[in-house]
Length: 227
Image (cartoon, rainbow, N blue to C red; front, side, top):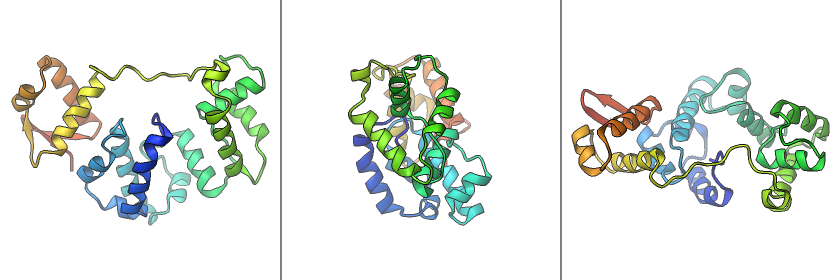
């Protein structure tokens, strides 16, 4: 949830999520549609699809043991950063993970070029790591970067910036997804075109992307939330 989404926006979603589904196995049993409905508003909805797919794999193959699954398998939507972060905060593993805050701290405190690579920063972060206190260390660094050594104070910008939302394909995807989640069945391209006034080629391209991302499924000329 925290990937590309601010903490204050995530907290109410996270709190509601874990009250609904306190274990990975609980979440794995729900439908794709219900998972997307709970995620709606967080953005980047394909993250919910990957999380749901990962939960099913962990529940079926590892009896809900997420840490064991991370050690043995590459799970959808979980790259090296998230994998290490989960192991750090869940198990206090002596690993490092460099988010945008930690990157800024290392560059500022060690007076490094802003072009310093991720690999170089990870090597430096590992040298700084107090063994046996990884969870506490990373919490402290992330809080320090988020509240004190900010991007505004240091002038060190994130590596990537979010693109404009208004009028973008992301906005249209979100509108389409809301429409599908509120519909009991499928929608045809013609029905969708009457609601969304954009060129049909753009609409088809976005729908095809949503199919590839696992948000929708297409049967003949009908689109619906993928089961």
